[in-house]
Length: 173
Image 1 (cartoon, rainbow, N blue to C red):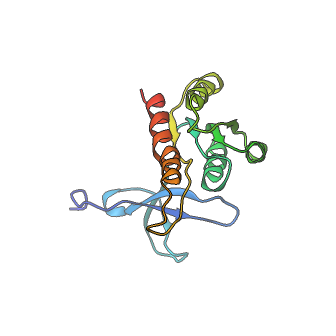
Image 2 (spheres, rainbow, N blue to C red):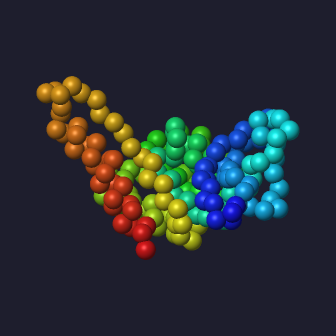
């Protein structure tokens, strides 16, 4: 019986010319009667249910949002119509991302006392709260075993662990 059969679900990425990638769910049609289908692999076969998943509009705080993956997250969240406040430590990169998106950039360093509190306060004033926290700010340290600098390791943990925990504690209900 098709209704009793459990079908695996997977999130896949489909990019079409002229369209940004959309997260979609693919599942075997055996469990979804009467669902609209699309051809597989560009051929005439049918059999994959495709539904676009959309998140309702949310208020995002993205740390480390002024470059790399963080900037990409800011751009995507803004494109999808979410309100976004993002942080970074360098005014120039903050301005660049803010100019390219509708995100609101805040110069902040989570390792400095009071900066996380200030960031949450700005989010509350600018967006009325935070629904989604993306703790993206991070750094790395590279040294050979036996040559590790304890002060650099402490700095690494301050950024990658302790500032994230502090900010999460301030945002979590």
